[in-house]
Image (cartoon, helix red, strand yellow):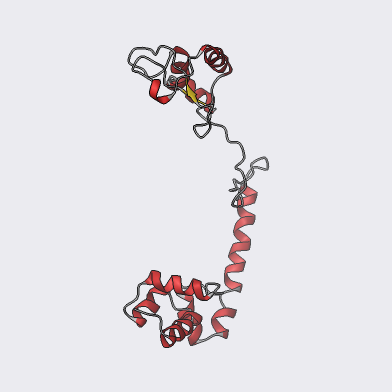
Length: 189
């Protein structure tokens, strides 16, 4: 299927009337809803004032009457409901709000259930001073496979100390990697 001038004009007309992408695809034939959406975006038509639910069908029948009548009706109950809700809510409780972070911005620090206790971190730092600093090819079943550093750099290495039986890490790194459920649960609180 190719987008001829006639088909593009019909798409523009139907999109302007508030038709959904599915309705347009059905009317055009031989094109999917996603193809219509893609073409709309490429044409720069994606900013429509009205939603594509049932509102566009009501607009062509009577434009002035439906717009004037629904607006006052929802405003009255909406204004009354929050007043009642705030009267019942204790003054020290604030409603939860989602924080919207713009794309490309770093996320704020979040409490993590996987944070390492200061004692364990001190033990790991001491052990890493004694580490053998092995490469991936030097690892065996009996060596600690705890990675240290950034794998994209040349100073990346593995601990290499003797591992505990049945575990991939040495004693210090096992203490960090395999924590009891109770200690993880307590740190979340």
